[in-house]
Amino acid sequence: MSRFNNHCFETPRTRLKDAFAHIDATVQRVSGLDHATMDFVMCGYENEPPLTDMSISPSQVAKELTSGSALWQALECIHFKLRFSGITRLLTHQIVRQRIGITFSQQCSGEVDWRHHDMLWPRNINVNVAVYSMGSKNAYARQVDAQVPLQEARFLLPHCLETFIYADCTLATILNFVSRRCCTMTNSWEMVTLAERLKNAVCLKIPEFKDIFRNPCEHQQCLYFKAKPSDGIVFPWLPDVVHAVKPNPEPLYNVTHAEGSCGYPVVKDEYWIGMETVKKGEYDADCP
Ligand SMILES: [Zn+2]
Image (cartoon, rainbow, N blue to C red; front, top):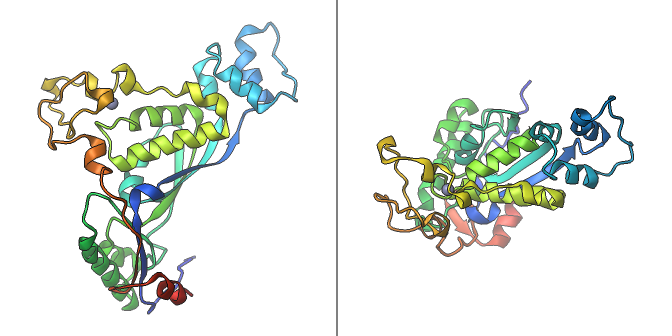
């Protein structure tokens, strides 16, 4: 059964906005911070199967998990439902490479008409060239209007359109994801920002978890420090403060990750109807 939302013959409406500002990671639900996980933790130290008081609070369980005495596999007892939004398909393509202990559900482009999706714009590309991406988006809409199936029309869509993805995973997976994706020498700014915001979202929900996130870059244990020249890996940026102890002999760019990606002015909102920019009031009035 198709759930196609029919926007045929509607002129594409596009809000162009700052990509960095809109990246969001939200913890929708946490489960497992309960007596059963506490039993799991205590199992190794008891003579009889432990039966923890059911009134134990999530905070007490979280404290036990982060005390250093709990076995690592107990982190797999804590499950998260996450929502990543304000992101592009460039990023979801990278997110889904995390495979162990995680599953995903992503917004479809073969069932949904994307003509009205917002456009996320990076700060280091002049907004004047957004007209080309806008042209692709409008061409897509014309193909859909001409009965070209969405599965084929989407070949025309630009990468910069806003989308979202949901994930279901364990705490152990989140720790692994953040530790690998927070490195500025090996990840895109979009990914580093998402990893930081995911960490913040988890710690906001469960403050006791703040100290179990470990940044391997600060301990010189990320890929940048481990890689040998003979590995042939190219690291594009100049080392920032965290990585400065090891020079990068052949950077592609003569700036740090932060300078080269987000060290530019914030992209101001633009409102487009078709191929024309309009004032916000006119854009809002056009919305159904
Ligand atoms: Zn690093």
